[in-house]
Image (cartoon, rainbow, N blue to C red; front, side, top):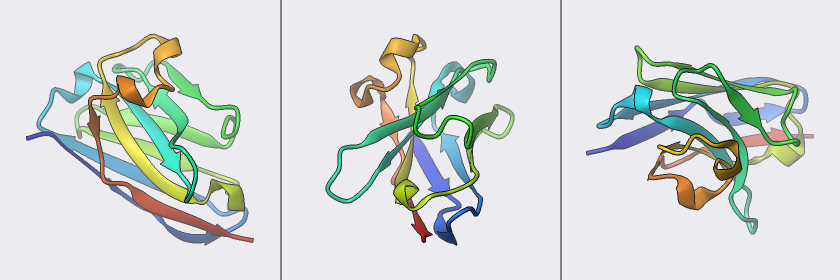
Length: 126
């Protein structure tokens, strides 16, 4: 059974930092590109970024580029999302997801992802 379990969310203030973790089990983690998405109430799920299976390439949406960093530890089956300089507009439920796709043009598309976590809430107060 494949499981993706996010943790690390919480309530913070503008300018603060948070690190989200996503622990994966039930699949060959090092074979998957891992993505992070977020969804605010009443909005569609939005691509945040992704990291290739080796960790050698990362991709970010323009809204988080320069503030968020994705990394992974294949020995721990874990992917991380370091979020700095948080803004109220970053408030959302954050989800990790796994895909066998690797071409950048596919990564923002939720339908390309085979497995999803349950999400962790991040709330940023002004």
